[in-house]
Length: 569
Image 1: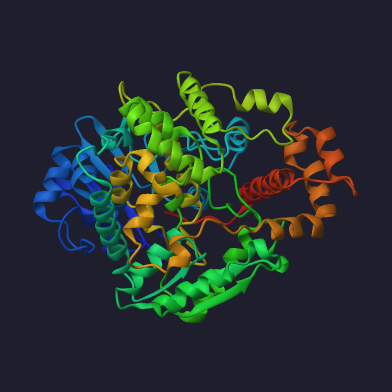
Image 2: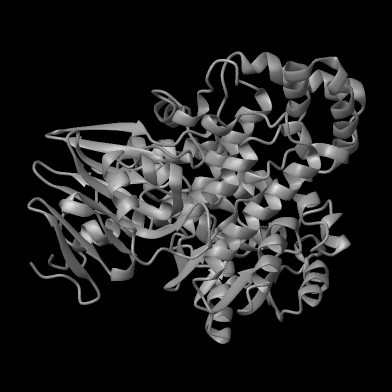
């Protein structure tokens, strides 16, 4: 068996072999019971990555069939265990290490990148039309089924059990285990706890590198991460992207912040020359739902990382989801259900200030959220330019996720929406594992931060009429007032319109003459009417069109691998 030159193999058991490209991320378990691949930290103590797994932890991981990993450790990992139940494949709750598997007759192949399955000759890539449709319709909902035939995805916090020719799945981590409202802790105490936990997690990830580049927006989330990294004494640089229009230029806030922490700021502009309609922004994933404009961001951040010699790229990605950035009235419903009218009046005032809506409007929306909640959480569906038959096929079967089923007594509308936001976060974490060979880190998605935020009552996150209020208060002493009090967010929308205008002819040719249209997935009449020159177009329509163009490129990318070079393993 011949491995690629950058990989080494490790025999775990007579029928278990693991290949990795860096031995320091391989933790062997006793008596050939399996391995843990990835980066591990202890829940308590110094925030240093574990170099050698203590015997007590290794024994407990085996004895608990992996549960010890979830309860006592955290990080970015996948665990392969041999137990009486069969072979187990456990993915960490943060989802920072992507995990796919291919189940053959007497062999299970596990990879972090599905292209390895093709390169090794295990599969000739074949598009799963139903999986492709669901990827487009369900807007990145994580599912075990992918858009590649035979390639399966392991959900964050879940465990695939391989027993003979059968595969079953169980959840080892469930967000609802942490949703016990912290009624015995005040707002100040929760802020202090969140500051401590977030600081430990960012410090843990930052301590693995000497030179880091972080993408900043001058907003809360990336500023929290950058400020905490600046305290590590490492070589830190910031980069921000801007468009030609004011909406996409956040450099003023970024400059205030970078000066505040004494770190150099690199300003880059979105460049149309970095856009290639023939290449998908998520071609490394097993299903599409990518953004074409991210190619320009990727090109800029890779160039900047090379310029400053960065070993890793950090981001504030996931902060909105973890800290529960919401302008909905659901927190009012949560508080009324939990505390009655007495507490609800304060939250009503906060939400009116946050949203600009009057009290009657807020109450009406809160009541609607409560009433709809009885029907279960409705996952957002993307219908733009898809044919009625495609929508029907894509929505065939259940549209849910194991995390969206709250236990009795915990089903608060705002909390379920918070959990849904954590589910949405998974796709972007998968999409941004690395760029240009440089690891991409999202420390705010760390398991301890997520778990603590799940226990913060949703109405506290709009305290004082500010979104992510607990996180803002937690870092009020470390961040500039301009960042803490900022209520606006930038957007690359102007650049997205530039892409559409510049490539409209090519977009038309690719969509109307491509795989999606040929397979009957698109509503040709609606698409042609929108694409015709001179037709007015909304920002929403532009986004839908560019998502479809990226999906078309994703299909082409995988089809081109059918006759690609193979590696022997």
